[in-house]
Image 1 (tube, one colour):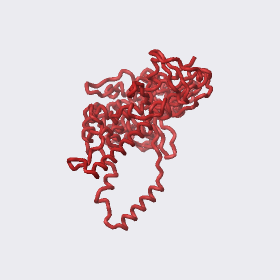
Image 2 (cartoon, one colour):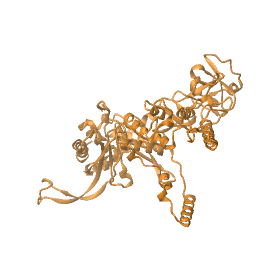
Image 3 (tube, helix red, strand yellow):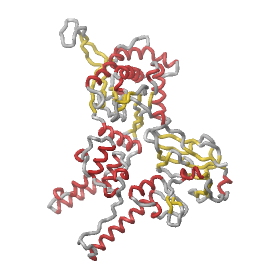
Image 4 (cartoon, one colour):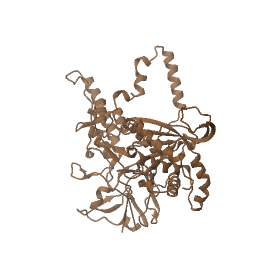
Amino acid sequence: MATEVTLPDLGEEVEDVTISRWLVKEGQQVSAGDPLLEIATDKVDTEIPAPASGTVLSIRFGEGEIVELKAVLAVIGEATEKSTAAPAQSDSAAAVTGPDGAADTVSGANLSNVRSGNEQDSKGEAVWATPVAQRIAAEAGVPLSAIPGREGEQISKSDVEAYLRERSSAGRQGADAGTEEGTDSQGESPTLDDSVASLELRRLAATYDIDLREAAGGRPVGALTRQELIEYARVHKGLSHLTAATIEHAPSRLSESSRDRPSDPDQAARRDGAREREAVDDTLVPHSRMRQIIARNMVQSAFTAPHVTTVHSVDMGAVTGHYQAHKAEFAQQGVRLTLTAYIVAAVVKGLKAVPAANAEWTEEGLKLKQMYNIGMAVALPADETGVGGLIVPVIRDAGDMNLLGIARQVADLAARARENKLAPSETQGGTFTLTNYGTSGSLFQTPVILQPQVAILGTGAIEKRPVVVSSSKPYEASVDDYLAFRPMMDLALSYDHRVLDGASADAFCGAVKREIEDWPESI
């Protein structure tokens, strides 16, 4: 009996996934537990194992396609099932042609998961399309039945794009012909089809996660103006600070302006030649999916929360002394002790002192979180551009752990994050984030808040600095003052000024500072 390959539970925050890479091919024999494919969510990449042993009879989606959580990704069964004739279609079962042309049978309840879409053509027959193809067609206002596809197969993204290119070309030719023949009674060129949004609007929509169909409000998306899209983002996406002035115009507009054209033809030729040489020497490296997600999230955060950063210097002497005295003891229990564990424990103290720092802003009010789920930013290895990714696994219920428990979680999550072995649920539900840029030698940065949290704490490198040690008030001179070299570290707290003010943010940092500097030797 054939077994359908579906997605595991990926957590409440995941709405769909992208198929990154298939690790098997149709007709290949697999055993239960063997990795079949890699998928990517907004937070993490993961492998999907085979639910049963057998032959991969069909693969339903290609690499790069976006699929819903209930989708059937593949079918595994006996090799002989591949040539079995499909039963007659009914309400409870239907025959579906796989990518290799073989007929596979799935239940009616799962048919919509195999091929998304339920439109009908002029003959009343169902028209099937991939989720990406459906989205592009819907944004363009084109019915799936109008798009020619390969007979017996679902319509793909490339089919829709090819159709739109042909229609656009035909529209331009018709406009040119109408102009030449003078068929426009008003003496104007006919208007081209406005069912496709401009490239600029599509880029803005992608940047700020806007559905063009919703923004258009029932009109063709091509009828949307730039200002209408900005206003929609301000009202419906909470981007109240977004204005036309905050969005840069495309660089090509400036280069096409008359003031950018030299009057000297020789000068223009020399500049064009230099540009051609520069274009030849340049290397275009496509953005990785992780880098695109990071860019989108950082832009969204920058336009969502008014960021303010406060900095406090902390004496790490007590913590480093405890670390040196107890790291061997922790190692005997199979736990690698790091200074990050101490900082996580101190962060919990700070959140308990200032509950508003462990919260989420909503228009109705401030949602205080009852659990202390601390996200821990982990840098991934760099690629050929010298830039790596960043992933944030979450230490859940950190408020209920002692130093040993926190250290165990820190070491385990960091190791599995770098090996790409985190489950999607392990990157969800964070209430506060810690980023340790000091591991690379940086003393100070201004971290960006991970939405919908209200603050993020950055820790710099520990270095010995001359510090005045005094038992009197800081601004009073005393003969008892003396200079000491202490291991110092700077804490940088970026916070959402809608939620925290300077006093409350400093109160949080003060609680963290006291916990670190007064760390008891017995813990």
